Image 1 (cartoon, rainbow over the protein chains, first blue to last red):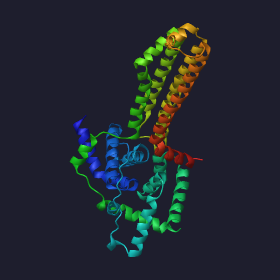
Image 2: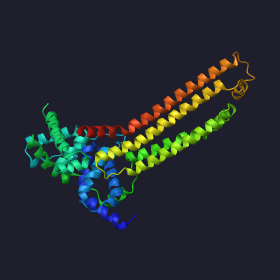
Image 3: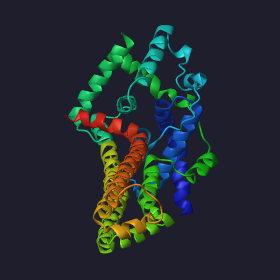
Image 4: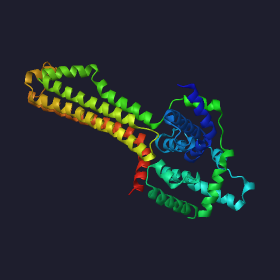
Amino acid sequence: MNKELEHQFITELENNQNIVHKVCSLYTHDRESHNDLFQEITIQLWKAYPKFRGESKFSTWMYRVALNTAITLYRKSKKRVLTQDFDSVIFKIKADEYDPEEEKQLTLMYDAIRQLGDIDKALVFLYLEDKNYSEISETLGISEVNARVKMNRVKTKLRTILNP
Amino acid sequence: MMDELELLKKDWQKQGQKLPKLTYDELHAMIWKRSSSIVKWIFIISILEFALPQLLYLIPSAKEGMEVYERLGMKYLILAITVLQYSVVFYFIYQFYRRYREISVLDNAKELMHKIIRTRKTVKNYIIFALSFFLLSFLIIAVGILFSDGDSFLHVFKLEEKAVDMSTRQLKFVISGVMIAMGVVCTALLGLIYFLIYGLLLRKLGRNYSELKRLEV
């Protein structure tokens, strides 16, 4: 395939890889699966890249492909080794930036998000990435009103998990 | 609650420095790896499912089966059924290919899931069709045996020389019965294997799809 296209794609991906890593950190629980999912998303992005015409920002386009891969296309491999240390790498909160009370709260929040279903996670992810409801509705294929209703429900669910 | 979520959002957006960072070369190596996505698996498994029933006919015993049909006087009936069967098989393959081509990672999540499930459904219908035909062929043989004339029946099953303590009529019933029982057991077994594969493959996707659909009610 076209060398120039390849170079362009990898440069864009290199600059925006955080988005993919964040999706992976939400949907997987150990380093191996994280890499697995990262690789699958990369392959899907590359396969779809010829159709990317720059109508939207590269990063916007990435959200859709990355989430689609995580909630639809990806199959967890059977061998799953739980390495607790990796969780804390991704979701480690720097103590000097927050007071301990806040830090505790954040840890609880991340744990709560982990317990959500795949679709709820996608909603929270898009919310955390500061996407508006029209983008959320377009990415998931639900109406804006329903995206709003669902988001409120997810927030309630988080609240219940936090304060049982 | 809003405060907690805002706090979370701020923290989330600061996480950049703590995430892994892959180099250009590492990413370059990745794009040429093989995908192991569910769509790819569906494609491979579906092709196998289309091919396997056809392969059954290449087994020598199946060829002998054709001879049995001939001797039992059902050659033209079977021929007509086979032509019909293959037309339907090719129709299913064409439909499957069209559906498969429609799947795009650039659709929204719901649309993508819907298309995958629809593609899979095409194969599911094909399997139901193939299994019904499989069962039907056993039934046809059973009926054929019942209505065949005694001599050729005994000849087909090589029963002339054997000293069997049963009338030809009784023998016909026994062998028909065995045929039907075999047909039912084999069909059930194949069906079970198929639905297990299908279920395992699409479990996660199916769950997420129904969750998304529930949102629209």
